[in-house]
Image 1 (cartoon, one colour):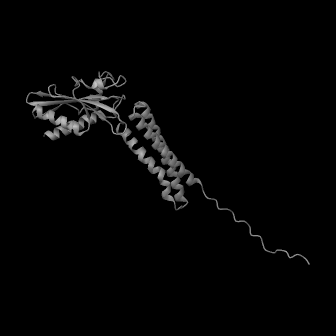
Image 2 (cartoon, rainbow, N blue to C red):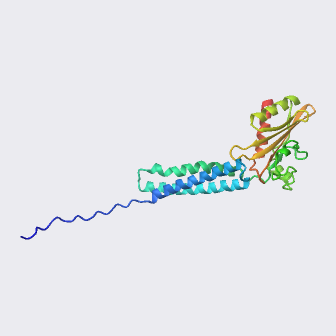
Image 3 (cartoon, helix red, strand yellow):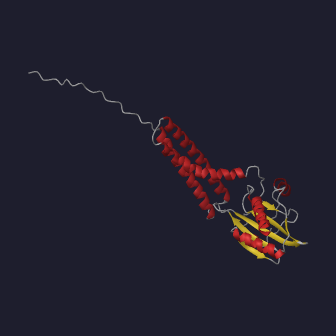
Length: 264
């Protein structure tokens, strides 16, 4: 007998569907880069607050964090666009890295944008001819901190007059004691670390520390009786950095406005 041949037709192998790896790869890359950005920012903040690095290294860390965040946003945006084009159901999953990166990049960029156009000065005073002097604060500063002699830059006075012409001595029609007491209370309300309070000398000295980076700016408030009014002058100085992004001027502006409002 002849062997029975198997007449079943062979079924051609179906091609394995090719699953695009572009979107998952970009999504993962976006998330990894965003995590890197977050890590760099946290390390910069923590190490600076612990005194392990100076402000220059901390700013470099924040700069690298912002750059990483921008890359994460780009990878996430491209991944989302490709997922949308392919009509993939996991579209929301592509937004994770971009969202995390935005939470890091936006505050950093907002801070930088506020400093655009501000002069490279860090010592601001309402009295340019006879600035209030620090008496207690110098003992709390280190040799590496900015000098308090107002010699850097040489055109400091002209720069302040050009950019912060609105900062002037505040005159209040209230007794010295009332103004001094209210100024001390306002300093405490703002959480500044008081170094010295002397009603006899009409001087309040304190330090304001920024929330995240822990940058320290020193403040002296001089209060004097002048005729029937009370004169208030204020000076704010950053311990580190050539420029202050306008922070010292805004601190003086805000404090004097609040003092005036509370005594009006």
